[in-house]
Length: 81
Figure (cartoon, rainbow, N blue to C red):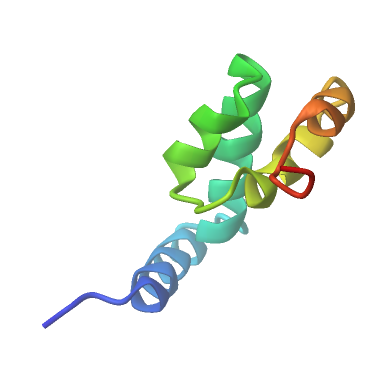
């Protein structure tokens, strides 16, 4: 019997709300990714940590960082390749 991501997220959210934490599993994942990017400025590291297939998906965390806009612009996502 395979555990589905939605079920894990739902269980984590129930637990968090049960202990009076308003965050969700998704917001905690986003906070982790943002902190990891800010600490490392390594978009590929954060991509691997999150399991994203593309650095383009992960680039939202770089764009949220004041330093990240230039980094995202400098990345090539294969459109010109």
